[in-house]
Length: 308
Image (cartoon, rainbow, N blue to C red; front, side, top):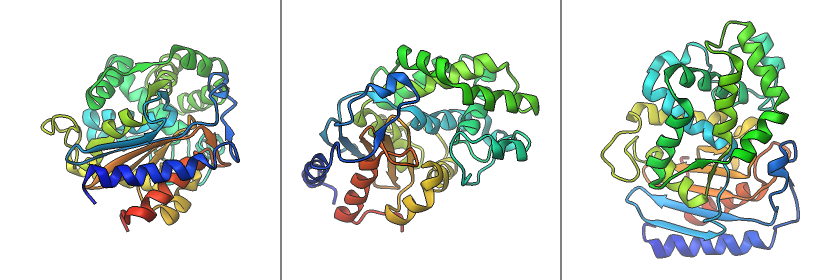
């Protein structure tokens, strides 16, 4: 299946199926006030193939707060600059605990289990702050990958900073173990801003395109975003750690590397074929989009595309 019309028909079928389920389960993230106001009855889906064919359905053009999906791109930026040195303070194992857990961090002396839980992403943000203007750097990367200007949502960033007590605790914990180079405030300022990035499904499907192209830039195809080896590793981490503590179930039921966020967005990768982005704000008990996951399951069922 390579033709746009074929993919469009699949996405239209999925959109029609999911729309009948909107409002019948899941809860919008409420611990960040700016997210709590997002209507639950939204669903968007978009894809971009390796050779630039695009298709979308539903609310695929509506921007939303990408939240933890941003961790995928800050990790990419850090790997570009630091290579293997990045892993000196960050593990690569699934956590098996909630994404904002403090317990594991204490027992493992301030070394986060992986870069996709909050502690790990804060550790990545610390390294990016050391490298320069981290907030400008991540927006430059996102805008380049999406092919259009990408921005922070200042209201969401402020809302995160006002209510992010557990993230402050995580950062202070790591600082107490000597695992952060910078002061807690600028590191968390970067972290809260990266989570506040607003993008649509179509923009996210484009931006993640390098992950199905062995690291080649999704727009111009020339500039390497990451090496082929780094890209494989990012996809591996998405499969094992990208959906909080539901990663095993997601691998079992969907079979694609995914990265989710509590804004209701999920990016999925079919290596050498396409990238896919879905959005529906109502979350399941693990913090993943309830209908976003259902849509990915339908997509795999209809197309037969999986890494397994």
